[in-house]
Every structure is written in structure tokens, then in C-alpha cells.
Amino acid sequence: MKRLFIFSILAVALISPLVLDESFAQKNHVINIPTGAADVTAPYYWQVEETGNTDGVITIPPLDTVTWENADTAAHTVTSGTAENGPDGIFDSSLFGPGKDFRHQFTEQGSYDYFCLVHPWMVGTVKVVFGTEDIVHILHGVASELDSEGRGFDLNYKLDRKLQSAIVDPDRSTITFTLAGFGQDDELIIDLPEKLITNPASVWVDDKQITNFDSESTEDGTRLTIPLEQTSEEVIVMGTGVIPEFGSIAAIILVIGIISTLVITTKTQKLGIPKL
Image (cartoon, rainbow, N blue to C red; front, side):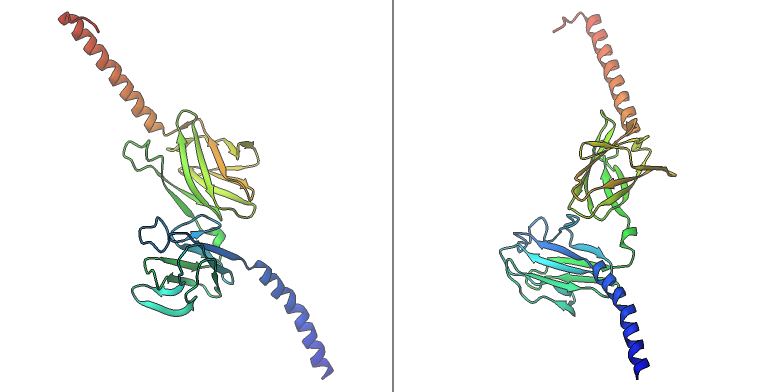
């Protein structure tokens, strides 16, 4: 009996640290329901506090919790399932009003759709997977306004937060990235194709030039690993040039314009038309 008691004590002593470590590793993720979400014409119905993502989709590891906070003036539900097939019974907040919240802990991997029973156009998904730090995000259509075909570039990146936008400045040979939300001290890993920016060798974070970033050549360009702080809001990358093909097109247009001007001037002089 004494031996059994001793073994039990040892088991508890060994298991307890593991349980404590696991509980400390758990995290709460907040999704805000913004004012006006009850209106089907609202620009968005959810906003992930960490990333600024507004499509209602969030990716988390198992054992983490998601809290939906109602900042709207109307009551809502957060109900697992789909508007087409109805609730699936996994979780349901019931109706909760302005200033209230609902939370649910996700213990198993999987994809969990959810919607509002009262406003069924409000839909989202919680994706529960291991290794969320390895998820690659995509920033679509970068520099589409400078691309002759209007497509731009899709940039792959890894970051707990979201890249809100990227502005390309051909005159300064820079790309300015704006970050959404706040997180832990982190790093931005981003693949920059050579066709978008050549030799991206200088980096600024919040107007301060840094040198402690890593640069790695890839098949299509350069992979940068840039350290960030919790409050970092802007990253500027400078190279020796951006959108080379756009520069060529601009040069061609300029040459055509000059030639056209010379031709018109010559014809005007031959016809004896007085200059304005």
C-alpha cells in the first residue's frame, strides 16, 4: 500500500509540470464582431484582433481558445455548422448581446465552420492544425497598378500577423509593407521575386534601418527574414530597382512620345504653320 502511495506521488510530480507547461502554451484569440455586422451590406462581419483579418477565418493550434466579442449594436450567435446545412452541435453561443462575448476551446484538429443564426451571411471558419508557425500566407496583386497586364505579384510570407498592404515606389526602388494587428516579438519571412525587386539589401522597420536581418537567394529571387517587435507597424525594403519591365515600358513610351513630338514639329515647319 505504501509503495502504491509513493508511486502515485511520483506520478503526480512527473505529470504536473507537463500539464502546467501545456496550459501556459495555450492562447486566447479574439475575433471582434464590428458595429454594423448585422447589415448584410457591411464591408465585413468579423475581425481577428491579432492579424486584422476580416474574412472570419482563423488558424490556431489545438488547445487554444477563440473568443468572439460583440461590438455591434445587435445581438448575434456563434454557431458551429453552415447556413446551408444548419448547426452541427459542436458549439453554440446562443444569442449574446452588445458588449458580451462567447469563447470556445478547440481540442482537436479539424476545420470548424461557424455562422450567426440570426444573420446567416455572417460565416467563418476556425482551422485547428499543428505547426501553425509553418503556415505560408499570400499577399496578392502587389504592384498590380504598375504591371502592364494589371496582375502584379503574389508574395509568399510567414508571420503570425497579417501584411495589410504593399506599396511599390519605382522612384525610390522600395516596397513598403504595412502590418495589421499586434503580436509577440516575431519575424517576417518573405519571398521577393527578382522581377519585382532586384538586390533587396536594405531594410527599415518603423523608420529605423536595421542590419540584423537574414537574406537568402532563392530560385526566383530573395528570401528575407526580418525581426519584428510587438508594436512594429511598417517594413520598408530597398533594392537597386523595382519592376524592371515597367521601367522598360516607361522608357519606350517616353521615346515614342519624343519621336512623335519631333515628327509633328517637322511637319508643322514644312507646312509653314506658325508655332503657338
